[in-house]
Image (cartoon, one colour):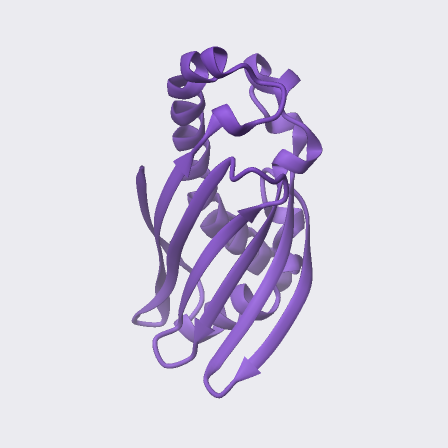
Length: 176
């Protein structure tokens, strides 16, 4: 499935770019469903910055019908991103911490100048594979797949918008 989001931010494109690329863990207190983000690796190569961040999702935000199948590792993922300075853009892929390829997710994040502010644009390709979750019978996985996909779309789209809201809250708190 494809998910596209574009949200305004109260920062210049350069400020937003450096915040998201270089200081994402500082946004955690403002993110709705993330417990923490750890920077695992960072390397620079000319105008490119390669990052690996480990994200820990909030287990309390998992929908009740599927909670018994969702373990901590399923709500933890690595974000492999390559950011480029000239276009303030990242090409990234998410790697589930739990093996077996329970999902495939790639995308781009770009900060587009808009006067004194900017637009946060995210384009995402996501495929989920509930039949690969350990302990979930294949028949049950097929039955729950539409519910899981619907739940993911309903959570991811607002969560992506929430990134913009979180950045706005972070900026407001910084100005106080």
